[in-house]
Length: 118
Image 1 (spheres, rainbow, N blue to C red):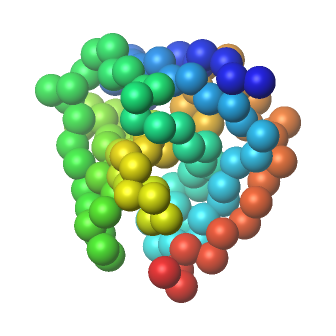
Image 2: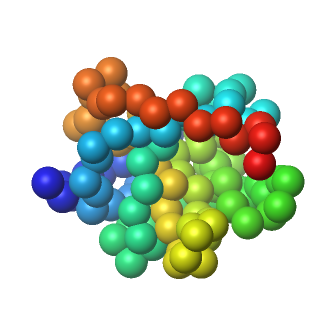
């Protein structure tokens, strides 16, 4: 069931809303996700709305430069990323469910992804 969540960074400068149907989250073992401990859920970018903090975001892209990892320049928290679905090319928002206000990340089924092999 699709639900609208609010989320953001630790200091509160970056805030967003996203509509997600979270049936499972991704735990990726790429060099970035492994270090961050992110648990990711994905939504079309049309279901993501940045409410505040655009000027406070810094972007980081590595490897193929297809995902723009956004993080708050004040507190350093990466609460989301914007990229393209590798199969369809559609723009997607990758949401770190640990940064959603009213979601308990421990309640979601976790699927491990071998991102370091991409």
